[in-house]
Length: 484
Image (cartoon, rainbow, N blue to C red):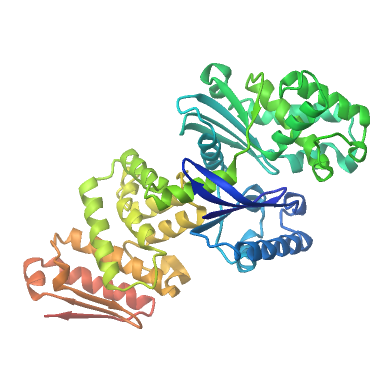
């Protein structure tokens, strides 16, 4: 069983699902309208009230998760947490409340996970499709065929900000609605052409906002009852005639959604106008289903991160033989260091495979270029936290260790750094290492025991190990070498 928790800008949601044949069946679903996006103050920080509401919800979610025997849990934060200036200070408290790490994912990764959820819910393996998801803080538009996503764009326009900006106090006026649509269109117009009608057969809407709009249109026989541009325009006129959010009372529209659905309506009209979409089909799948499918894929050893690393290595013309050797030897050394868990094992391997990508920029300071690329690149499957950890490993592959600051206080991370540095050192010294003849330990100090023959046949190894001792000494870690 898998659990996905979505910390959205409008609502926090939880899904618990079980893989059953070709589907993941949801056995528990919860939604709490936290309005995290509305809790951002003028400085862009989460207000104390917003934090309190979020922590209370996460504590309640933790109690629910504890009642299931789960194979994996993944908690993802979206636009509001991407934007919050004090997210770094809030996250440790939030993680303690829910009892699991929280991954703040990029808009592009959010889009990929949404598409994964939708594609797995549709029995159309070769269908070319457009998927639109309108969230509280951002809008994602995806293009793909079957299970394969071909293009994803994330736009920083969502229901919360659009509703607060153009319908203050819940007033609904015609001029304000047109301004809200025009504002949203300006966000989409430049990126719209690759998503136009000729590139797909069917368009789907995956978010709660879109499903709510579809339901209210159908149940109130607005327009022709389908989710078309004409029906949306008719619904817009119905809202304008009501004049206030408080007066909205339509079958199919929950009271707690009315305040933000008007902003979502403006955004959806803008998307459909800019991308020439005549009709959307609502689908009961999205981010949380995508997260659970991703967890299932990892359990089946189909990790999207492996493909991301392979594609990046090819893009930056990495020497595959050198990269593979460093990765293999770094993992062998790391195993000798007896890590306490698997936190850095895969990150170390992937960092080793990508440690030379900066050479395509410059051979001078290539480790710094590589670290910058890794931390800031769009890497499908990876979280910002994982990319930052890999960037730190890569920048620490050579030279002084002061540049990674306090990161070495984490002994498990320090072990990964040591393993990567020594693997690269052995490669540069052209040592074909037999790790049965090497002993490496790291606790209060580093103990390295190597064969005298290595030193005799590879004169530079003494120089590089002496430099390594100096660099570790600079960060107050003793490095003891024994030659046998």
